Length: 117
Length: 115
Image 1 (cartoon, chains in turn cyan, purple):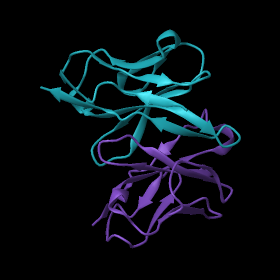
Image 2 (tube, helix red, strand yellow; image 1 turned 90 degrees about the vertical axis):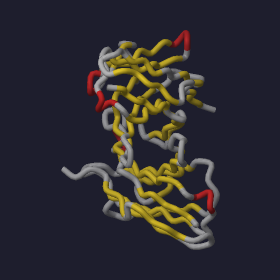
Image 3 (spheres, chains in turn yellow, green; image 1 turned 180 degrees about the vertical axis):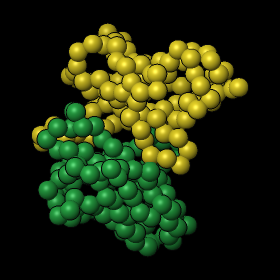
Image 4 (tube, one colour; image 1 turned 120 degrees about the horizontal axis):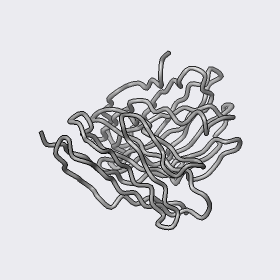
């Protein structure tokens, strides 16, 4: 079965510092991978996705992620963190299809990001 | 262009009661999925509806049921509520035939508290 591990429950960085959030997946075939962000009391917003092609994926808000098949990883990075980036971040993998191209997602438990001024 | 809307935003119920949550998909979307997010956890897939039929189901008991209407909106019903059902319930919509280019759009969720 597909699974996602986010090893870091909570990360604190200073504003302006670089950020890397780790994600490891378990999947038998080529994975389809996502990063979502959730602000307090809000739903999930898609940051970026990887389906195929270039292993370095650019997303919104200055985020990027790199797919490394050999390490089963899809880490999220940002060169300079802003206070508004404080939120919870979820990595997810497609966990199965229901016909057509429609899928369900299997999420990790999330990483809470705190940004110090 | 309205995104995914869910109602109500908050709900408090007593153990043993039944609850109905509602979701309207993003304009142009025809598929609705429901996820449960317990405190401190990632969302877990409950089920997915397309063409008014349940297409996929996660590891949830039969107390969890759903429905999709001809206008693509959906309801999630939970019977015989347990304390452990307390969670944020997220609805997500997508376009069945092109989900890769039309990824899941999530609503802000319904916070259910069972006392």
